[in-house]
Image: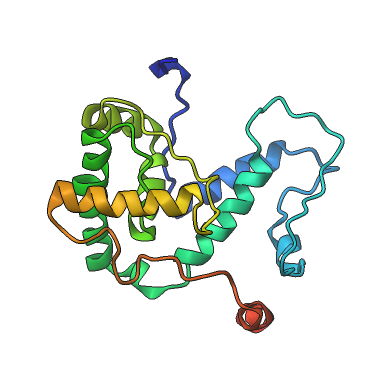
Amino acid sequence: TAVGPEEILDHQVPSSAGRTAGRQKAMAQWPREEIFDIESLLAQQPLRVNDTEVSSSNLQSAIEYDIVAAAGRQMAFNYQVAITLHYRDPKFMAAATSRYVDKFLQLKKRRPDGFWVPTYDIDILWHTHQLHPSMYVRNTKQICGQILNHDDSVNDRSEGSRLNDSWSATCQAWHEEFKQTGPAIAGGMWRGNPTVEELELRPRLQA
């Protein structure tokens, strides 16, 4: 089904001052009996290893998309990119932008039926692009001929899985289309799950 401009809720990343003003405006209209800022409460919650169960309330949401599951996937993604310094390096990010626009989107344009797997440097640019919905729709339709769907629910890396096989296919297609070895790149690959040592360091890092 085609998505019309009237169905797109656009978004602009606010400045620090704009975010503060927006929070104050929201707090003024928030029900007094409900907690508005839960960040401090979240920081006090323990990190649990191999805990995939999420409790749910009895409230029925009108939103079909599973936001809780999506938030969990974003936590895993955040670990891959948030604490490594090269994701704050302008040169690294400029190269990642080029790889996203000139290679990844072009691969989707040339081979639209493929399930192409991005590296993390490409994926963070993909996420950033989606922060601007109207621009994202316009750009991907112009470059790829369609609105590019971002499916982050495929995370099984075992041999024979869709993700594993699609990664091999991505490498092969990348080589055939661009005559380059890739898209694997230093600093852009999966760095594993958080270790127990990293989880135990959390209180010290927050002190």
